[in-house]
Image 1 (tube, helix red, strand yellow):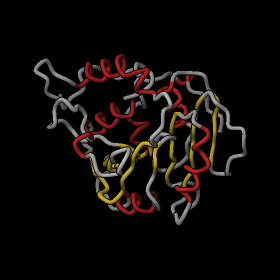
Image 2: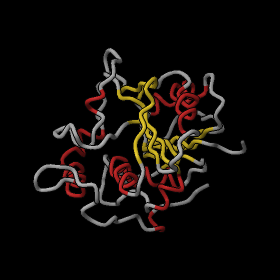
Image 3: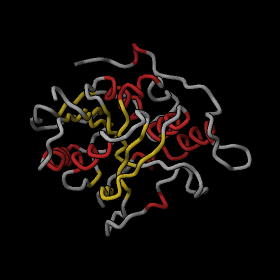
Image 4: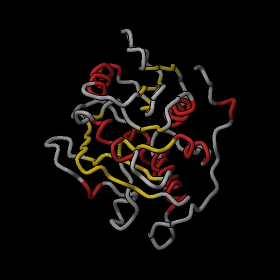
Amino acid sequence: MSGPVISVIGTAIKTQYWLEFHSILSDGNDIPFEIVFVGNVRPSFSLPENFIYIYSEVEPMQCMEIACRNSKGEYVMITADDLLLPPMMLNTMYSFVRRMLNDKTVVMARFADTIDGSPCDQLSVFDTRNPDSPIVGVNTIIKRSVWQALGGLDRRFLGINGGVDIQMRVYEAGGHPFIVPNCLTREKPHSDVRLIDKYVDPDFKTLYSFWVLPDGSTSRKRLDSVQPYLDHEIPIVR
């Protein structure tokens, strides 16, 4: 296989975790991959050849779209730089990705408790207030051509939930979720400020306005059209 198969993309500023992040993905892995991180904190060290950093001062979700449009893999994996990844993660996840019959399958890791690493499947839902709402997850892998066909992220998201919204739009277009059962991912236990702390109110309000009906149920059809980023807002640097 020539070039990366999976592009691991994210908005990222916690440079202290980056080399460890790359090392975990690389160790024992035989799936060609690249990392594309975008953010406003430059690393003070050299990055491996397949680790691309793009400096930008725009909002985090716009950084994510920049990362995707500058990626080259057949698939993109939405991630965050403060996640603890399991060993041989890409091998494990791609073993399922390659066997999916539907190009619109969203393959994802299981979310785990930050402290003890036990599965938290009850949190892998679109709306935790509604346990019957669709499955959404972390380290989600989507075919890049599907992302592009859907128009990318909606520009109204600022810091979070753009990836959740695009998962829901994949389902609306005929896709479905698949959780890799033996691939547990959790946040690093730390005191850093998280994106959700800053953006929880506006971005959840935006997300629910697109998908939650007046009776509290989750709509299978998006309630508003997508407002994508314009080409001039997304620099292509590669």
